[in-house]
Image 1 (cartoon, rainbow, N blue to C red):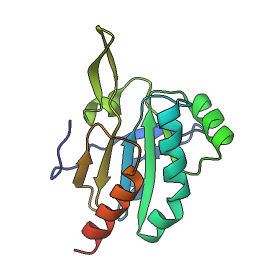
Image 2: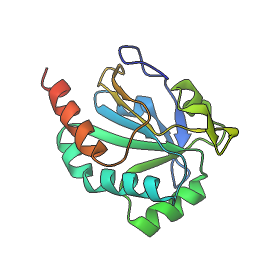
Image 3: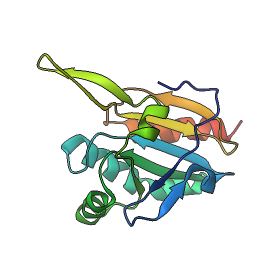
Image 4: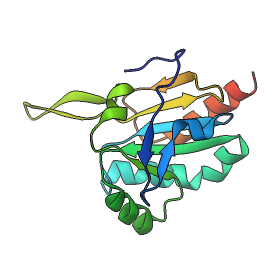
Length: 156
């Protein structure tokens, strides 16, 4: 997993509407970049809903929220429409960005090993430096934790 202190790996990925979105598009802003396993699963839906509800608060703090999963733009579009999501959903089916941030890892369940997304969040400062990493995120309380850390760091 990528550690705080280094430069955030750059990327360009399609959003839910197929438009290319690049990390560099947000230079000068804070970026909350989070990785999640799958659209329309309970934990992922809760996380996306919580971030969407808090979007205005993050915007006031000068931050944008980007969410990445291996799902297709079409899947993201349905997911966003069904749950009225307002955050930017990005598609990484080839796992290139997931891998560059260390969020694509070997997992195991019921004795079976497989590769998958580790729910994780990265707070990137306006100069493109990773300032905080949350590996293996638990959804409950996470949005508030990220917001609190953003307030601390942006006030430095």
